[in-house]
Amino acid sequence: MTPTIAAFIWAIGLIAWLAIRIPRRRKAKRTKVVADRVTMIERATLGLCIVGLVAIPIIYLATDVLDYANYNFSPWGAFLGTIAMAVFVALFHLSHKQLDKNWSVTLEVREDHKLIDHGLYAHIRHPMYTSFWLWGIAQALLVPNWVAGFAGVVSVAILYFSRIRNEEAMMRQQFGSDYDEYCARTTRLVPKLF
Ligand code: SAH
Image (cartoon, rainbow, N blue to C red; front, top):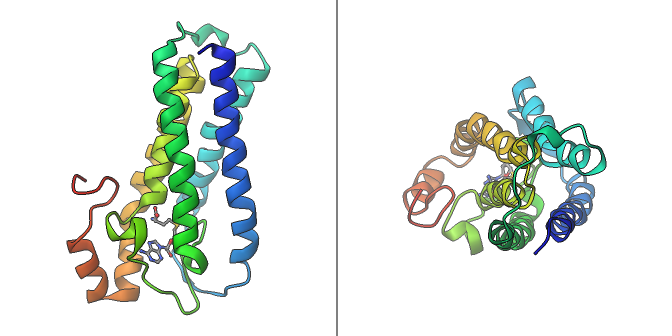
């Protein structure tokens, strides 16, 4: 594993993200939104994720402005980063597929919204966020630069911690005791752990 191959793997992750997301966003427009909890903070944290997971690594790869923060490349770290990136793509794809018409990029309830509790969702409530954490971790392992490497995981942490309580409160308001029971048999990000 070389830094160039690691950068290539990071780029494949980015392309996979676009290839999965773009058609889903188009499809989601067909289902009406009936309620939302979209705030300025919510929008800002989504924008921050684009900066941390996309813009800063591109600046690192395309220019030398961040070179002052480089550190030694670890082939083993990059190998683990490749595994994390592969699991990110698999979870990201499956969670979109399983949420189907109920998916939104932000906190929204759709017309005829169903509580999904099968597949990945039978074990954890937020597999898509697990996938985002893995993307951030993969970037930190693949990009040997203190700024560009860690920008992803920091922006994912900000998005996750500012959103998770609001999202669960919205789902509880929508599905009542069904959601409480669902919470009682699942964890948030990692099966049986947390
Ligand atoms: N937090 C989930 C979903 C992220 S997409 C995950 O990480 O996999 C965000 C939208 O998904 C929210 O606006 C909400 O409307 C919807 N959502 C979240 N969990 C859901 C579930 N179990 N069933 C149906 N819709 C859900």
